[in-house]
Image (cartoon, rainbow, N blue to C red):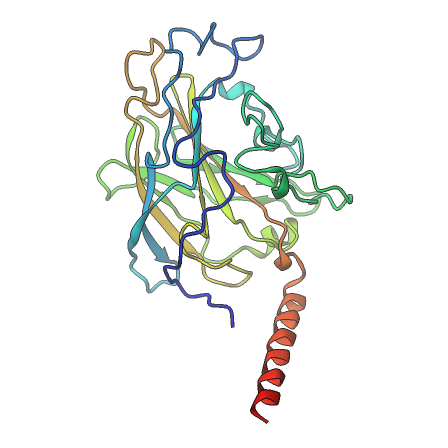
Amino acid sequence: MINRTFTLKTLVLASCLLSGAALAGHIDGGEGHGGGGGAGGNLPDPLPSCTIQDMQADYIRKLDGVDLGGPLDPIRNADACYGLLVGNNATMELPTINRGYLGDGWFNEANPDWWPGQPGAFIEDEDLQDLKKDGIADDPGWVYMGKDDGNGFDGATIPDAETPYTFIDNLFTCSEDGITYGTCTGMYKGRWKFTPPTEQPELLLALLGGAFFDQVAVVFKGGGTFLMYTFSLENMGLAPILAGETKFEFGGTFDFEDLLLNGSGDGTAAISNVSLWARDPFLPTQVAEPGYLALLGLTLLVMYRRRQLRVK
């Protein structure tokens, strides 16, 4: 049977832009992007590069009302990172349909200034999906979950003609002392925490075709620059979490000293906002849950009958 309990299994990294350290990418200084030549304004050229050690997960808690949480052993680095990237929030277009479709929001665009050689953020061509059900696998799958602009994390909405879905507030929070969590703004190092709803909301599953998110990307903005990091369920040692199953809270550390640069490029900038994206995968669980369970039951029945034949 499929193991749904929390076990630390062999780490298998998801597809990523780079392993270990990412390029110091930047938007050019052309019209609409802001900044001057080179890396933009007074920023150094080349820009500093992020590493996957900048943001780590070291804590996990099952949201069952009983588990008090405990350390991740070993500590997980981010799967991948990208930055520094120079730009302003106004030039990073957010999605309108918000289902992960090609071209809907900057994480779902094949833009060489943002994702050189990739069809979207943190994915390869083979990761593209047919989320629109048009027979073409060209959708990157990134769904925008919301933003912390200084007053705490504010959940974004997936629009729908009948019943839209709004992600919960305080989905992503930060702390300087590891005790009190709230807005991430004004910090450049500390602790972070990702706290989803206890179970996958039925409305969210309906809007996204019954799938679950397989990875989360966090975008930190400060001083006209961006840093991005992504974590996957596999990275956490977890099997996919299906409808009705209890989810997990994750937490860890971040340290962007000498990475997020101020306007003059000679000091560290504090975080001015944080945004959150999750990737909607096309997997067997996009079949209605009863159908998936029936398929699983059939598989187990075949295995049982084969075993009985061997015993005879």
